[in-house]
Image (tube, rainbow, N blue to C red; front, side, top):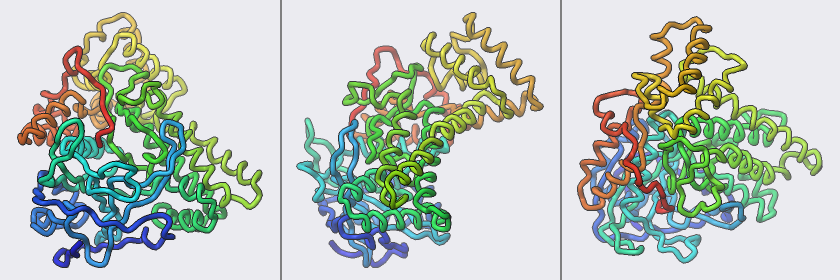
Length: 484
């Protein structure tokens, strides 16, 4: 692999200072004729990168895996994970960390290629990716960013000029992903499984330094690390639930320490509200259904706590007590965050004990009448035209809601503005996303670009977004796959 000497990006690899067991140096497989399909100018600008650089032959070569950054060798990270409850040793099977970009403000972010070839962790896979799934991750991650939900983001999608063989030959592509880091619960599970306390301590210290520096000054820094991860995950899942997002595969290797959403495989947004909704084709038991996400997140952070036990206290029983004390806060933190999100969706500024009942009564009504999740709240915000709004049970609920609004010192204008800021006019409905991807895979990106632009500010309530407001037609398949 050649090194790129012309870009002024400040690239390091602090992760490479960890013990060698946590990664393997790799070289992306060079591809024959890479071409840039999509670049994220807005993200580049926020990182202090000149967007014009993204279209240069040098940058395209980097995004394709044909060149690297000067002085930094790409690596594949090792980690483990509970996949559908079963523990497995894993690693980056088709992802490679090119390095960490240091912005002018001192912010550090990972620059990772996805679909750039085999690694020692590929386990028989080819390490490649197809264009459709890479565009899908780009769109969904950018939509999540627009919704104000912590997420990894996509800097570019590059086609390789080489086919990827699945059931049929597909267009090969590489995604350039940006993340606060790729440290996962599974990274700590990997360290714990090796039963090397010093390696575990180095990983924990590195994580504190990178993501929670204030924990280093606490009396129990590793307890503070645990508490920080618990708080971030509780907040993240509350935001997911508030917009009706279903991740699909909440394995521990898909839960970041930073609190960002990562790995957009079989994910989607609820159309008809049903808490049992599952999109993933492989989740036949409904483990990762919409209603199970808070509980699974708590289960995952419990696995994280288990890895930290040797660091929490030298006495095992005391370590368990400290871990249990931290974990006991998850449910409270989640409910607090979720209630705050849902209050905002209903235009509530103040807090009352009965608010949770008001919210759950509405959700029960939505389930009973098979109402669209996003459009119910959108309609409450702008026009109140959903069909089930004429039913007796909704009318009774609405009377309670109006009475609740009158008990707070805010006028109707303020209420509507608050609701607009928290109820998206548009979400990336799977039907429209798949429609755009089907056209993109045939070489027509116009539909994809239009939808992507509409998703940039989902709270704008523009005329452009109205095209994507209606739910998909009946009998549309909502099943998604682990293609990304």
